[in-house]
Amino acid sequence: MPENATAAPARGIPAPAPTGSGAVDQAIAIWRALAELGVTDTVLAPGSRSAPLVYALAGPQLEGAVRAHVRIDERAAAFTALGLSRFDPEHPAVVVTTSGTATAHLHAAVMEAHHSRIPLIVLTADRPAELRDVGANQTTRQAGMFRSLVRLDADLPAPTAEAATATELRTAVSTLARAVAAATGEHPGPVHVNLSFRDPLVPRPDTDGQAMQASPSTLSTPSSLASQAAPATEAGSAAERPQIVLTRRSRPLPPQPHPVPISARTVVVAGDGAGAAARELAERHALPLLAEPSSGAHSGPSLVPGYPALLAQIMADPQHPLRPDRAIVLGHPTLSRPVIGHLLGAQDVDVVVVDPQLDFADAARRARLVLPAARGEDVADEAELERRRQHVDAWRAAASQVVAGLPSTWQQQAALAVWEATGEDDLLVLGSSSLVRDLEQHAGPTAGRVIANRGLAGIDGTTSLAGGIALAHQATGPGAGQSAEQAAGREPEHTAGRVRLLVGDLTALHDLTGLVIGPLEQVPDLDIVIVDDGGGRIFSGLEHAQAPPDLLRRFFTTPHGTDLEAAARALGAEARTVTGTRLGTALAQRGSGLRVFIVHQEISALSLEQQAEVDPCTT
Image (spheres, rainbow, N blue to C red):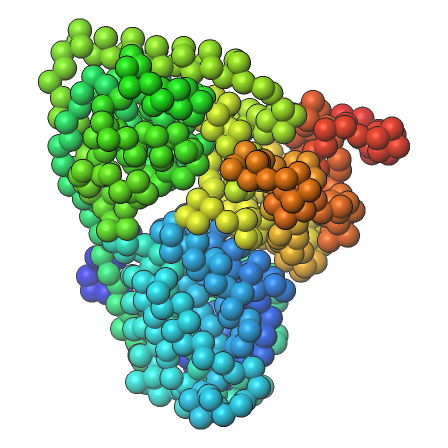
């Protein structure tokens, strides 16, 4: 929500100038409301029934109000929007699709948004009531299709054909205001508004809604507010038109912290999205911090790098001198069985969960207490704090010793090269594969921001998600708003950090359409590192490793036999194959746009020769 959400009097939005289409009238009012309420980006998939939203967005009444991105695949569109929202949840992104099967492709992103509590505004176009359940083309029961996952579910009736009435416009604006409030409220997450549109779906050529004359470039550089983006003649006429009240809901206040007892053998567990609160709690009371890579707390003097293998040893021995008696859990821990099963499931460990929501993480079902926010209740003096610091040092030393005895793989080395290349201004996106677990076990502290889809830990849309994050990251930097055609001739520029994606080969293959960026679209500045080991290595570390080798290989590791470099090039990305030992050098090279690095254990002599012709530093 905007900072001035509580300002008085509340500012309204002007009613749209008549366009000759009630659907386009309503769409203009919807976009104006969304822009005023903090939406800066939308991702649209092509379609006819959703056309009013396109004409409205591109027309002279709304030029520049919201930055538009187009993706041909609805799943890629949804995850791109999710990435935009993940980067800055205060400005939730919108995904737009036409009716029919297009809506089904949004489901995975809506699920992830729900479980990871990320605002996402889903707008699906639909036929009017008279065309539903009568066999009309591309018409299905899409109203309420995400009902169990969304914070708000609305089905707006179609406005009057030739001109939306004042009541219809007010209803649409009010509904979208509620949607934004629900998406960004106390329990953030996705919302779904199903929009019925009745013909005509296009503005009349003789009205102010001549959207076809708008330049596509105006859709990639949004102003802060729709009214600021309108031409002078439009702004003047808008001031004279009736105002539609726009409801703003004040931002929820953070919960008040509750006291939690601290003992000398308390540990802090920081799962995905735990944030700085986990680190602050651990450091204030000199406690060991067991932080997942995407926790937002993977740094500081309390951090215990490489804790999973050590924790497995500790929890296997009831008399171990490092064995905890209490665990304070923040965020959503999902990665480590030693944490989720052995530590949080132990009968002699008191589990306290810090989470303001009712869907708090307690997979072992052993949480004794759940608090919306926590402050340590501690009577330790300086001597006790010093003993605890020595206890943290013992954890760190023991973990380092255990890690030193673990086998090292080329995949781990590749993951660590990407991790170590992540600086303070960089952002790293991690796919759901063995690589994120390699980092949990082997990575040291980082100053960069790390994001992962750990809500459901699926591999859907990971490249698209990272693309959305990259677009948001570069929105105010050099080259912002440039299309693929414009970026092709652009010299590499210094920007505020780089966004990188680290994934396995199966995750990359699962979202190849995430690489499809049209020539008129803004190109994300994104490095994609694909560790290609011929299938899903993660299953070899689970109980399925005991399966017969042929069964394990075919049905679990699933070798793909795909030339990933050729596939990426065919889809328009700059791609090259590297070895893990040269990956760090390749990542350090300046570049812009979409770059794909496929990491192999070894590279053939022919490939080495070909790569040397392109760049001798990339092999």
